[in-house]
Amino acid sequence: MESDTQSDTESDTQSEVFNNVLAFCKEPKTAKEIRNYLGISSKRYVAYKILKPLIDLNKLEYTNKKSINARNQRYVTLKDKKK
Image (cartoon, rainbow, N blue to C red):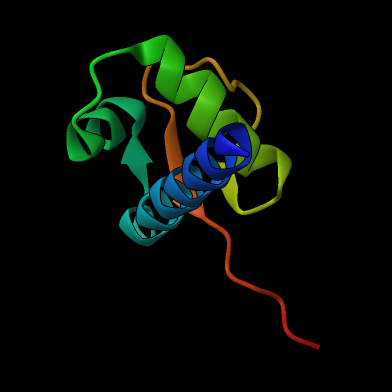
């Protein structure tokens, strides 16, 4: 029972972090700016646990799509497409 509660709390926290990043990235931001905003020092954690999942969900996109590992890469929130 406790693990379900812990899992729910973790997914709520992750969802909150994702929403904060999406709100922050309405204007293009670097990974460093995002890390500083979140108060997280690990480049790897932010890249693989936050940025990559948001990109995979089509919520965030690279500003330099031709070179995703570019030193000056920025990330921007995709606008919801309403039909």
